[in-house]
Image 1 (tube, one colour):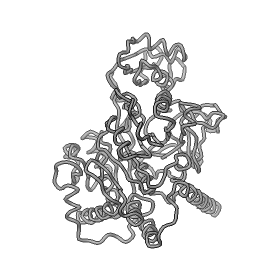
Image 2 (image 1 turned 90 degrees about the vertical axis):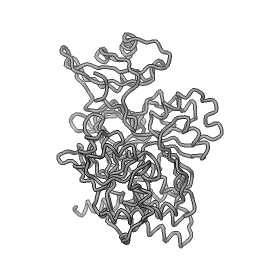
Image 3 (image 1 turned 30 degrees about the vertical axis):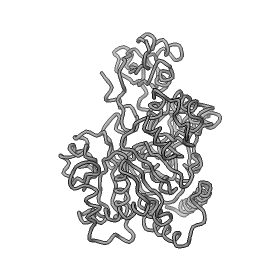
Length: 536
């Protein structure tokens, strides 16, 4: 790096750190602390950086008796969580897990995920967050590519691991050795005083191809936190329900934010709409981290009259897949203006965040770039597009990923910005509107068509519960659109009705020639439609 580049980097870090202090003060994280506890918090950050391990250790130093986790097994304080992750780290160390080793985590949402990530951070090992929807063959491929030493898995996911050659630890359910066995057993060696920074490797969604590992270094500062807090006003110490999968980028980010805020973290192994409503009221959860399809399932509950009348969350933050405009509006009409929508990806972290006010003003928006984030739309010639002009979405922020674990693959990069693979436009008010994936665009009869607007139009219909639209080959036009529609209960609709809705709003090339009614859409854990699993 040249002198100018170094100076710019130092300046950016200084600005980011200042912004972080401001936002953390507003959220209540930065406030007077007893000197002995402040020393313990500082030691945690020096030893482990901005990681799960640091959040656990700092929490134990600052508020040891505060509830850290509530899950299906009960509750743990921050001090207990710290002690248990220490014992687990030493036990894993005795099995050969150390700096640079890679350990897979294949679990639903519970304390074991947090304990394992904290233990790996204390060892300087890499945590590989494995998708629970992977097949046995995909798990074998990923385990081989990433050279996994061990996989910590819930009992229902252990059988598909037989062909991986990895050591397996059962995190939940029957199986030996179990995570609890290792914690009880403890280990013989001391923990490193200051381990090298481990990486968190998150798998891409793999909705259209095999998943790839994306290497994510720990944040070098608190600037990423400031970016999120500038748009989503979390409060320190307030209970947080993380319904989004912890093994996805969004759920993992929620975990880090909650630990930083010293929040009691509420986890349920399985998502149940009625159970989520009860959990929020029982634990008085100030914030819910979810994925959009969960909001849809909440609205479909038979009896919503008493839902959240006793206590309503102040924030319902969603990410992981597109938030349909009609869903955002319907949810806020029912539960108040509490929805925050974060648009991002495994590779680029966040791009933009839509506040409730943004979603009211423009229900389909992906929001605006938060503090410290540069968002641009590039046209076909690589130039910045004018307001309202469609192009490819590029972003620069404080959390770029280091690259894929699979050689020869990378995202598109232009002038320090990373491409998201999506197409969109920024309106005159600075709000981002997404059209769809660049690689989803089809050419039908010489016309460029994105499935996204067709999906949005269909999903907004009261007769439709959800819809997916994709391109298929066509002998006459090259390609055409096919629509897969899940009808709302009691709706009487045929294919011509669906085509008529689209014909009345969009171009004739956007009208799906194929319309298939299905009972449900194939989705992964974050609610994204898995296009390769659609019928046909």
